[in-house]
Structures are given as C-alpha cells and as structure tokens.
Image 1: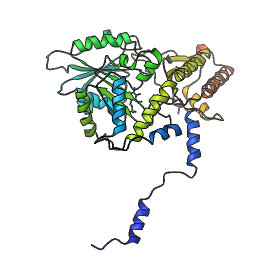
Image 2 (image 1 turned 180 degrees about the vertical axis):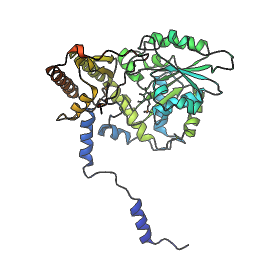
Image 3 (image 1 turned 60 degrees about the vertical axis):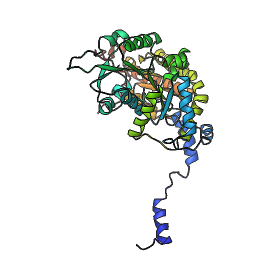
Image 4 (image 1 turned 90 degrees about the vertical axis):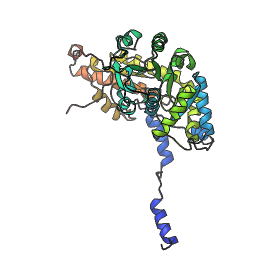
Length: 402
Ligand SMILES: Cc1ncc(COP(=O)(O)O)c(C=O)c1O
C-alpha cells in the first residue's frame, strides 16, 4: 500500500475540519439570552451563562462509563438530598423515566398507572410499551387537578386471571402542568400502593419547584417513592441532564440499562459542573420565577382572559376566547412587536431568565387586541360555547385558520 503523502493528508484534514462559530458568535449569544428572556414556550430554553460555564469548565475530566469524579459527587449529592441510596446521571428526563420503568419491571405481563396527562404516558413516544412491554393505564383525575387514591384504587389491576396485566407501578408526576400534588394525596397513594406491593415512581422533572413553593424538603417529597427522576435542564437552567435516584441495587441495574439504551456518556464533568452550579445558584431563583407566573395570571384575569390551569409554580395555561381573541392572533401579534415575544399556544412558561418587562408587554398586547375586537363590535355573548369533553386538555396550539 503506498504511503500517504503529507499533501494528501493535509487535503483530508481540511475536509474534516469544522468551524461552527459564526463571525459574530459572541454577540449572537448575547442576543440569544435577550431572545429567550421574551419566550414563554418552555423552561428548557434557558441558556448557560459565563459564570455557569466558568465553574463547569473546572469540573473533573474522567470518562463516566468507567468513573467520573465530579459526576459521582453530583449523583451522591442528589441521592443524599432526596434521601435515597444512590443516583445516576442521564442525558434526558425521558431516558431517566424509561430506564426507571424498565429497571423496575422484570417479567410481563404488567401495567403502569399514570395520570392521563402525564409526560410518561403522553410525551415519551409510547416508550412504556416499547421498552418495557407494559400496558399503560391512564387515569383522568376526577377533580381535574391531581390524582387521588380514589381515582387510582378502582383502576388497579390485580389477581391471577390470565386475561389481565397486573399493575406493578404507579408513576406520578409532580409538578404536572406546573400544578402541585397535595402531599397528603401522595402519601395516601404511596401507603396503599406499597401495601399491595406496587412500586412508586415519580417523574419529578420539576419537583424542585414543589420544594421551593411549599417548604417541604426534597427528602419529604421523595420519601413516598421508590425511584425519582429529577431534571436539571428545565427550571434549574442547566443545559443538559437528569438524575435518577433510588436504592443501590436499583441504580446498579439502571446503570446497566443506561449503557444498553446507549446513554453511557464519557467526559460528563462539564455537564455536571453546570448542574451543580444550577443547584447552588439557580434553585434560589425559583420563588421569583413563580412570582412572575402569578403576575402573568393576575394580569390576564384582570383583562377577562380565562385560566385553564393556574400558576401554582412556573407555568399557566390560558384561554383568550372570553375576550374574543384567538391564540394565533396573539402569537402573530407577539412576533410582530418591536421586541418580539415568542409563544406557542395556551401554555405560558416563566423561567430563571424571563424578563419581567416581557410579561408586561405581553399583557399590553392582549389589552390592545381586546380593545380592537370590542371596537369591531365583538361582545362577550359572542364567546363560543364551552365544549363538553371527557378530558379537558389544557394544551391548545395556536393555529391560524386556512
Ligand atoms: C414532566 C416532564 N417529564 C419528563 C420530561 C422529559 O424530559 P427530556 O425532554 O429531557 O426528555 C419533560 C420534558 O419537558 C417533562 O416536562
């Protein structure tokens, strides 16, 4: 085989080389922070700051499939804070929930109970069936706010009838759509589930918000559960990561499944550095975020806008039909403001980088649209009749009529 010449190698190296930075990257990044301060789409859009990056870049440099010191410290820390034996760093909340279910569930047939609105049931691409071969039992809470033991008890599958798939897990979500599950209901469900040998999992992507709002400790909130998935990249503002916590044997097996799922990562130090920074510096910002969400709700209510799901923590869902305005008109109007605002539909999420001015500008836009409708002859009696549905879905997308 002829040896590769320096010239040929230089040609290949040139083909391989890559520059993802624009000429104005530093300025673009400053603009991005300004942009997301006016986006109500999600709390996943928050961006790492210079301070976060400076701290994170000093984290250790190990390979996490073997052993990564900073990552092991973060896992142990979150396990301790939540009162569990061990923790596992994962790239996403979806992978964390799915690995938790797969680790708990061993021999089908079985079923998993969730709230009908739960992320695990609705937003994980049918993962419960795909990864664990489990039947899902979605339940609509009778009180339209949170599941109670009464809702669940009637739907638990048990016994030895060969037609059925016995319930092995109850997977709760707290917060769910930003609302808080009363702890007394969590405790009642957990006590009854454990008496029946049913495992309790919590999708606690935003459980931090519950601690920040109620004053209950993370341990108190996690005690009723055998496993808890806690996201770092949502309300806390880290760029990536979720920690799954549980017993030592559960996490040992989950670590194995993480590799099997293709989620064994290498130099995770930078990522957990961001997460540790977020725990220390961003968790304390959550009460301010919740206050912004309440201000948004108060302003909307003063304008006569309907509230589909209240601002108990960082988000709310609204309905502009009582003032004759449609979602698409708001979305388009917001995009055309001198300083645009971005949103999708009924869900409004506040985050640690939300600008209070964006909320006031949004309310002003709705006031203007309301006045325009009234001037064009719209009256409250023109409001469309409320549709009677079995399940009031609070997620409404903004769609401009064709
Ligand atoms: C409640 C809840 N659980 C789980 C997830 C999944 O997280 P990820 O997007 O990291 O997979 C989300 C995502 O927004 C979520 O809101």
